[in-house]
Amino acid sequence: MVTILSLSLLALIGTGIYLEIRPLNPNRNTQNRWKAVVGANLLLFVGAQVGLLVLGMHDAMAEAAAVNAGGAREISVGLGLSLIGIGIPTALATIGAGIAVGPVGAASLAVISEKPELFGRTLIYLGLAEGIAIYGLVVTIKIG
Image (tube, rainbow, N blue to C red; front, top):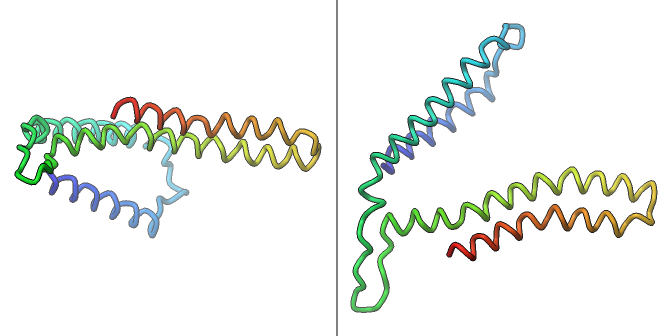
């Protein structure tokens, strides 16, 4: 399973480098191809996820490792996957907060340059946008 993930990651990086060096020709009629390309990507993604789920089911359902004499537990694949699952809400919430803070911060600077007395309101809007990350952190703490 690790080999499949590593090869797919290398293929993704290679495709990105290839498209950066040699982008699609804008003179070609690429608009008609987008539906087929997006559909193929979606089908490939879902198929790969199902394949990884089927191939990795045995490892994820493995029994917890026995406690050794020192009292430390060995981390199994199932425990590792659960820790990744616990960290995903924080990661996605932080990305969402970053996406939200960018435009709000730019708009806040524009408003402050025109009306400096609105500084307090813009801080509130920035705090609301940053609160998304705090909610993700709270969910991660509750899950863990």
